[in-house]
Image 1 (spheres, rainbow, N blue to C red):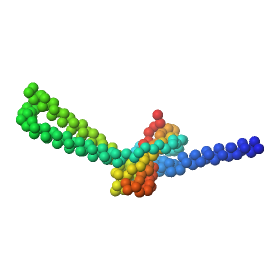
Image 2: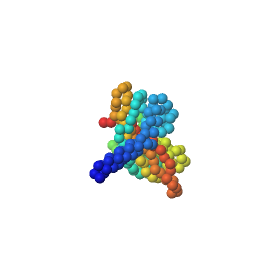
Image 3: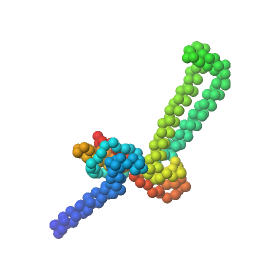
Image 4: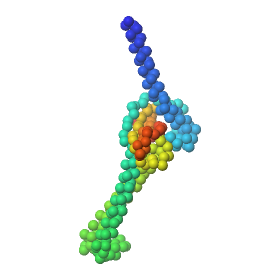
Amino acid sequence: MSNRGAALRTILSVTALAGSLACAGGSEQRVVNQYFGAVNAQDNQTLTSFSMVSFDKKVEKWAITSDAPESRRPATLPDLVKKVKDLDAQIAANKKEAGAFSLQHADEYARYKDATAKGGKVPPALAKFGDQWDEFNQKDRDLRKAITEAKAAVERERHAVTLSVGNLPDVDTLTGEAVDKQLDLALTIGGQVQNYVMTLRRYDLSGAQGGGRMVSRWVVQSLAPKG
């Protein structure tokens, strides 16, 4: 009985290992194969249809050596879009406040503009006004820098979501989760095996009106040497 039990445990262990390898070699393996196939063929059209990153080296062989469990976080695109709208409103409000301030201090504003028109120094009598006016200008610069960065973040995230779920008209409003998965890869480049980490991402999203979960696919988010 003990020999039969040991044999059974061995069979179960092999089955579990095979299942694990099959999981690692399923949809993720197809993405990896497609990625390096497109890289080697220099097929940028195919590559950019499911990847956020390119690779400039020919890869002779590739293999998934291990895969980490999936990690989930809330999808951020709706919040990023809202941030842009909020910053835009703050820029408009600051501009309105600055305009009202200049009207309330019309005489000081006119003298300040004349004094600084050609890079001149602010007269001591206008120092307080100048400081207050500079606060409006600095806030405008800070907000415009923030909105530029926020718009870039929206474009990056929108592109990633679109690659995963398709070019949907309401993509900015879809809620759900972003799912990341890291793969350890052994890449043979120039005859030498090098270790890399590839991050895949897909989106489990639902429509704004409470529709069912949408079909999504893995997108190559990053590829970097393993540190």
